Length: 329
Image (cartoon, rainbow, N blue to C red; front, top):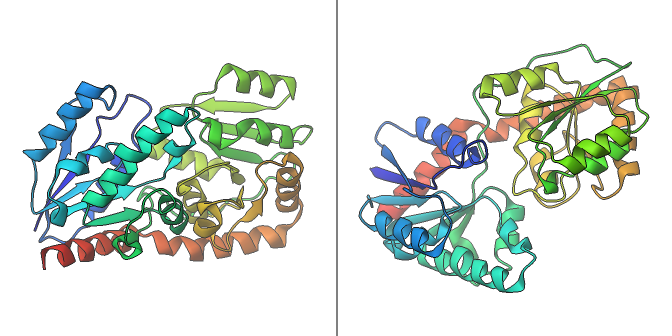
């Protein structure tokens, strides 16, 4: 079986989540799968470059064509019976410009979705959201979760009740950093932020007198070390298609505070405290519960480790393998 994965051209220091995800899947596919990767020549920007990306893909098809996200429009010109299209989220429909939203819905969602034999989403929440924007047979949309990194392992740590390290992964607007900072105001803690901070976030940290450190461009091994050093991991996002830091924290054995929205409760299972991400008081109360309740911490860690088993790379790769086989047969 020959499978080609169509990837966007990643932007330096910004786009690598898709590539890391499917690299893990490829490495865990059975030996009878011959896989290759086709990376777009240009960044996905501008009409002419996107036309080139789509036309180039026509000449690089295999038995199975898997469009891995971001360049969804590529699927429009591929062989329908042999094409899988993955949606990581449909956050593009939050674009503030109504005309832009319409164009995005047509060329990134509706046409590609109708031209694919199967669609995969990384959570049931993303599937449900996708089906709001395109009328297709629900049976052709399969939920296949994201596999966890092989660099992460259970690593017990004595909890620092006096000044816990709180790890926040991501700084984009949906990551809700400013409300997290508001929630932490006055608490004895150290906030470890992964991702490039903007001026507004830096100012908010300064005004609220938060003790913090900031890291960017970490390797997978360096990120694993940050999880090991943390006492609590937060992902109180206002939007997520999946929420990988939840599972990564659970594998390492850290209590998690995450949002009660969209995919996050689905991904977290019973191994996290859920909060209203728009309410800093709710976020603060959850963090305080973890700090002051040893039994709760132990329970969250135990349930989190059990939950994380759902996201093994072997299990996820096998689900894709079965899907590919069904398309050939």
